[in-house]
Length: 103
Image (tube, rainbow, N blue to C red; front, side, top):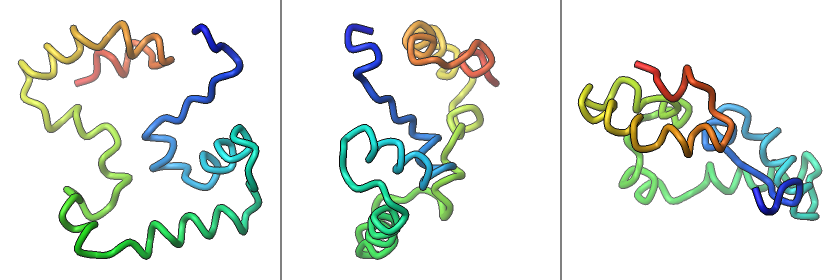
């Protein structure tokens, strides 16, 4: 809030579901090359990460499948507690009531 328009918010789900657009906006904010070629270099670099490193950290084959997974993976009591604890912060970051109370 203090930084206002001077801040740039990158949401995980945006990076997973709209990778190129999210990177372009981020690079533009940072003042670095945001051309399709620069974005492609970064995307290829991620794709070429050492498979042993990736497999040690990956929980699903498709990273996009991790978006919203908390809604089904958390036990109902844990989900309720998380919603109670994080609702205010989620709203502050622009998530609506449907996301905060999802299940």
